Length: 222
Ligand code: B12
Image (cartoon, rainbow, N blue to C red; front, side, top):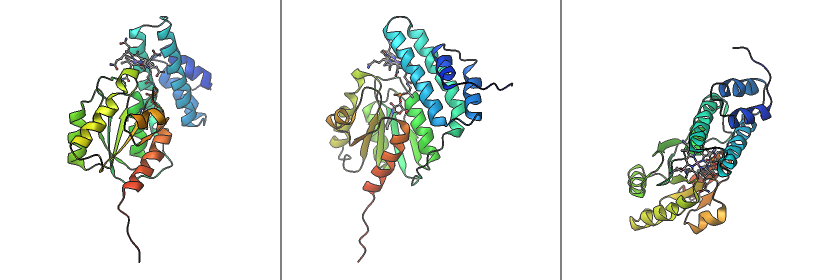
């Protein structure tokens, strides 16, 4: 394969053009030229934002959203080995899911890759995940952190359903909930009963490490 120097704008545009055949080449060229993988990821997510806007304007259709998702997945395959997190994890378990009714998993999967490269043990419950499955998994795994992704305004409420279901089972004190996804912010996250929120996967890894540390039993040194 002949490598030609590309720009971040070309990475973004290739995604907007939904060019699934070309995306691995442009992403690889950009990475091999030494560009920070986080910046390449930013160009790709900016591209997806643009796709979302074109969809809102009825210039793109559902089939285009589907193809955008597939194109992003091809890009992530190339970028994943370069995405090393600086935060070292503690090999503790994080249960992670996209909430019920929501079929967006690209952001969740980026977070998983970064958590794994930081040494965390992941139980991935996939997308459109019912609350009872989440509760059962938290119970059986003894996980200290539950990470939930919600991309649709109408599925944000599902976070509070999970929070309540964990409370009903007496498990809420055992597990911290962190949430992420475009419609969320810290205020809304807390309103839904979560303990924490992070804007992106890089911040997410840092926050999860902090939550893990907070949930460690304190050892008294006399
Ligand atoms: C690709 C896509 C799809 C694909 C998803 C494929 C897949 N496997 O994920 C498909 C085609 C399935 C899809 C379907 C729909 N979609 Co859609 N989709 C998108 C699109 C273009 C990109 C989403 C994405 O992957 N972004 C890139 C990732 C990397 O970003 P991210 O998920 O936000 O994740 C980052 C952070 O948020 C964070 N993060 C995410 N999760 C978590 C979790 C934790 C714990 C932490 C710490 C951090 C974190 O870290 C990530 C990386 O940094 C967005 C537009 C957009 N700009 O977001 C619309 C969008 C989300 N979709 C939208 C809509 C309306 C739909 C449909 C309802 C369309 C329809 N009429 O059927 C359906 C709903 C299906 C369903 N039930 O879920 C709207 C939502 C509007 C809203 N606010 O409710 C959007 C915003 C488009 C738009 N502008 O109108 N979609």
